[in-house]
Image (cartoon, rainbow, N blue to C red; front, side, top):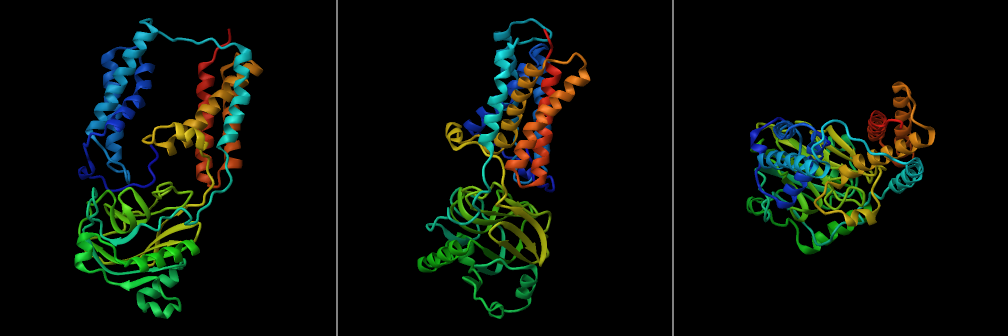
Amino acid sequence: MIPTRLRHPSLTYIQDNFDPADFINNLFLYMPLGIALSGTSLIRVFFFGLSLATCAEVLQLGYVDRIPSFVDIASNTCGGVIGYLVARLVLGRADGPRSLQLYRPIAVAAIPIAILGTVTLLHKRPTSDFSNWSPAFHLAAGNELTGNRPWSGTISELAIFPFAMSAEQINDFARQTASSHGTAPIVGPMQPTESTMRSGGPLLSKPEELTLYNTLVSRSQLTLLVRMRTNNLEQSGPARIVTYSQDPANRNFTLGQIGDTLTFRLRTPNSGLNGLDPALYSGPVLSLDHSSLVAAVYDGHISRLYVDGKLVGQADLGAQKPRLPRRVIHWLPGSLPVREIELIGAEILLSGLFTIGMFALCGVPRRPLSRFLLGAVAGGAIGAIVWVFGVSNPGLGTRILLECVAAGLVISASVVQI
């Protein structure tokens, strides 16, 4: 839904594994399409759903960290058909527009409900340290852990420092020894053995891992330096080059490869237990005939990726953004894409409620232009509140504002005065 980076499209990214929870989610996702088209024919709904789902999956061939699937196309199309059948059963077979009458006192109550709901999304700037790291995880080179794909490549050198290096220091490290920095690394410089790379086993003893954990958690900064060369530009998953983790689903940090791009995922209270909210992605930076010095740097707030001393990507892990209240999240199924629900569904729903309330309070203008203006202002008010008090990233704030204005315009196009 929200592509963050693009990749070179390839059919090798297609996976058709059947996941019951994902299949059911896809059914529900496309049911509104069938309901909206219930005034047409079943054949039209089928081809609309099939075309939209196919378009979405084809686009995912070029989206980093997305998995296109023919199973998703089938489940999405079935969801549209099911929505159509449900709407026909519940609403009958009358064609043409349908309307729902809202009594003004009830509709006006949507204003305080929308404002209170918006307030619950606003939170202070979150913590972005390593306080939620696990000391039980292991540092490993390579990726051959249970249930995951091995990384195909060579690591000739690995080092970890408990501070954030600058680009100049990274370039110095490439030319000099680690001792010249005046601060010894916690790990390295070291060369993982071939047997360790094949097994994906821990690189450190238990006392060394405890030292690594205590030092990094106390500093909440790190620099991971890896001199590497990939053997395959079609790797995905991502294939983990260096990981400080327990299994594929739990990590303190992971440097991985996706096609010809890199990703760095770092666990903080704000980015989540798997470091995916947000994860850091580079553009195309890898080639088969080149050995690269990759540096993943975190200064306690900003995560950066360097390749051969050049900055190729960064992410703000301490960014303030709207979030659903914890009590609400506990009621949601764990497989739901909560980030998308927070950033899209919640603001659109609240903007729609506020717009309905404003029409009930001010009345519905007879002129279409006046209706659209009122709807845009009402939706924009919710978006502005979220941006000013709950967002620190201008790009995210702009997107939320546009989504809220769009929600207000949709309501404006739907209301009539009786």
